Length: 480
Ligand code: PLP
Image (cartoon, rainbow, N blue to C red):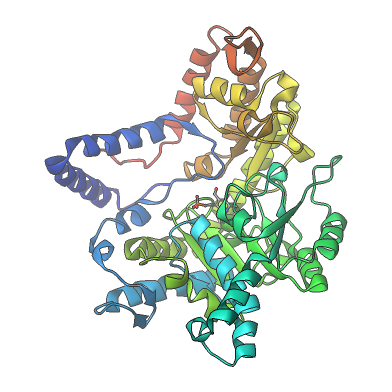
């Protein structure tokens, strides 16, 4: 990521930090430290990335001060002409980039995008027919009795999504999340032999459960999804087909996922975060067909408060970047690097869920090393490798300790890592894992958190990482 505008970027950040320092020096210090830490770590967290200076700089300005509840041209506040411009440009880039009929760029995060999607689907599929039956246009025109009936109907709706341990996300109907409280939920898993989504099993579950929403998308599934097949299943049971592409939006934007692997032509509603493989600011967005657009457009005030106009501006910049041919090269490299990493790990004896990857992430089953995910994550961190532990299908260690470690390539690919570097990353990871042993817990029982890393491994690994990072600097030329 070399930036020809680096002198201006340097000036901008120096000036910003000087101004922040004059008010609260500790915050300026934390910002400097974060740059240092990000530069010094081998970041393999699959959901993180490095946004460009243009994206980051777009967020620090007075657009932040404006209230703009409502939609483009229909705000609950006066003076929103510039927010209208920003939101229109961001939405236009999103529609063009993904080939969507409609884009809603207000959600503050992925979870908010999903909430907007869920309530839009409920509004379209449950509320609208009820209003039509009562002969009214708006929900507040319903009689008290009719409203009570509608409220109960909302609570009777069903969602079918991927199970958490197969790689699904908490927001896809699981109890700790509001989606699990809103919907009756059932999940589909993966084939125990192959670890792959079994579409016949999904179809059987859909026929039996008859969900209002069939949801596809994941946080920790290392393979592509056949969205054409999922659409057929949704159509067969009359479900709305929703895809949460938060993790792989960059691969869709970069045309790595095309045809049946591109969710946009097949889903009624698609949600995403903008900060993972898409490499934008922290935030979310919703894409929809024309049929669902009017309901999605009511996201604020239905679910969201005032939009973060400065972040919508940064989304516009990131989406403009993603429309450049260079982003396609980047996205292809992300997928190629994940494959190199997976192959390198397996060649060195690691066991991977689904025996490989064809997206941006890899899930190591560390039980083969006699470790829990927690032990493996901690040992890797001690050696300078930043990952996160993750459940594997039917995980005997549950969601806290887990038996897996999830790795992703988007961030290091943004730094310039290619196949040769990821081959070395595979070597570093397997050497740390095979040098780690579980340690007994304080009660003398076999521990799930404590571990012992053989002498010298952390130091040796850190030295090799420092060399790799130095050869591929983050924000090269940026000097504060
Ligand atoms: N959906 C999926 C598939 C995710 O992986 C995530 C985050 O990890 C989210 C939604 C939530 O995104 P956010 O953290 O921006 O709310």
